[in-house]
Image (cartoon, rainbow, N blue to C red; front, side, top):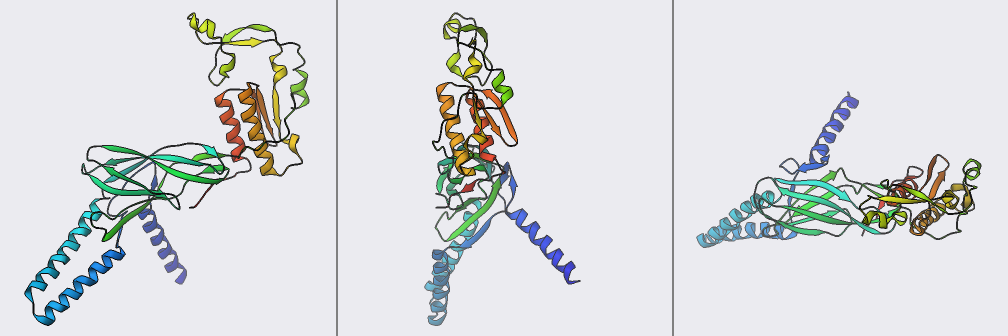
Length: 326
């Protein structure tokens, strides 16, 4: 019997928390999702009203009675306006900017007015991060970039987003917590280490790379993600389309970022070194591949290839990023 009551109580708590802290890509704030409570100034205002009421009653002073009642009416109106300054506000997740561990980045959200009214002095921030204050005019929308400081590599979800206001008089504070469907990838922090050898992959890959020379071989159609360093700009200017130069023996300049090449380093240090050389090889225009214990990517180059390699290094071992708290 006790266990049944406990289970029902926990289910009720879960429903309340879910309703008060919604999750999704786009969330609309309403009366079920907004908390409201007096600030320190609000409590002082409340006690002042009580004090004036007792003074007016004790001295039978109608003027003080009128002032007390007027202040109470003002307090009631403040509850209404503070609540309306959040109610009807829609928050939509937009995008985030990937970064390296320890760096600051941002995640963008879009604020829209469903009730077609102005919203004044709205503060938004992730837990422990700096606040952003916005003013939203009716029939408008506002894109906000919220700062985020990271600590460790991995796929990072920023957690609950706090939205609050104490408009118009600072007597009450209305706020809400929401969890947007938004994440970023935090890459390992680049750290220089021993340079990988050319063709430092397995024997199969090396056997096919014994081709001499870097003589011009011909042109082929550009594929998205390829390095722009080999684009034939002269032919492009002639209107022949986007072509890429190919050379005989070009495979001999492939580099493998092999997990075993830095076996004497700890795991996190090893990932940081591999991250550094992925960026460096892309900068040098050298095709590179990735070999991890459970993952292999064939050599290539270009921004898309680099992004893919860095992402795999970031989530290696099932890592989840951590948010830095101010």
